[in-house]
Length: 339
Ligand SMILES: Nc1ncnc2c1ncn2[C@@H]1O[C@H](COP(=O)(O)OP(=O)(O)OP(=O)(O)O)[C@@H](O)[C@H]1O
Ligand SMILES: [Mg+2]
Image 1 (cartoon, helix red, strand yellow):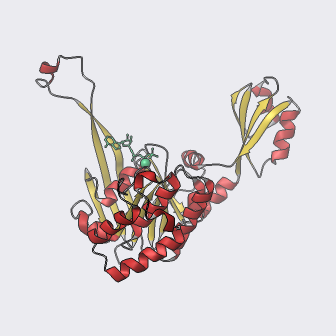
Image 2 (spheres, rainbow, N blue to C red; image 1 turned 90 degrees about the vertical axis):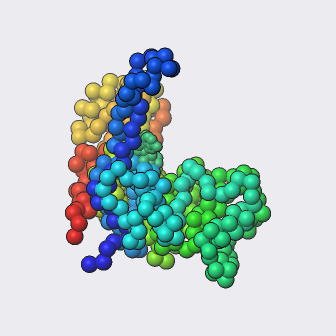
Image 3 (cartoon, protein in one colour; image 1 turned 90 degrees about the horizontal axis):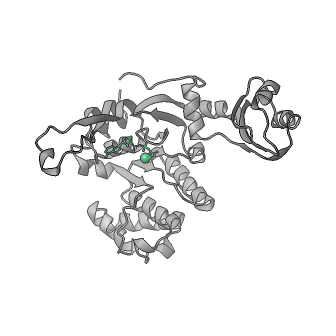
């Protein structure tokens, strides 16, 4: 059997954090052994990604998503375990690995701050030794789909967030890598630019690029990914088709209510058995199963007990997916042991 394009086995990354010792004077400090607490940012990850797959890699803040991406790029060296990307051990051969991958960290830019975007691209061309013909064609294509024309003469520092993200996407793709890691590529973008980036990612996947997409925005993954991997506390807690998660989530709704005067939450609970009521008498949320109650029924039950000043209904988000996994609401299907 062919090895999957991305393969991690029992991968761990432990950071050591210095403990805050007793307040010793500076000169005495080095005489005692410093104590550290080990923090397992990645705690035994097994992950296979086949060529052409688009995987959503999601989880709460601090779950270990960015650390995983950094291990896959070779920026970080694992504490233990194995990782191979297109046959290369990333941290052992960062240059060979870099040829195979493109990376976008939404919270950081790889554009040169003081250079026009065009110059950053030229530097990347030279770095990756992209043949001139190839470079011209790829740049022309990226310029068109990402509407980069007006941005090329502008220095990195003068770009807006959305412009910067488009330029960063292009920078990551100029050497036409078969694998792309996107760590929160839509963070902070307005809805219009977000849509544009999502459409771009869809095309990327449609053209056979292998994508690992990290995001807190369910909308990002819905059109792009077929598979969702959920991490928490540095471990994979769910791995399976996105469709199953979506169906499950489609059941769940949350109604947030501000009553005109505080109400007894126990009365709300009694009126809506099977729902989950949380919050305060002056502002509370009701989580309900769409197949058990309609939004109208929930609203009517509340209105029978209190006058409503304001309410809204929320679609579930990534945090809800993670919570659902913990509650056993999703059928778990881990990637499993090596074949
Ligand atoms: N260089 C570092 N030194 C020490 N601890 C670190 C370092 N990098 C990450 N961590 C810790 O490892 C854990 C995982 O961090 P990571 O950045 O991978 O989370 P994340 O899933 O990307 O979160 P977010 O959604 O906030 O981006 C966190 O507890 C973080 O504090
Ligand atoms: Mg992160």
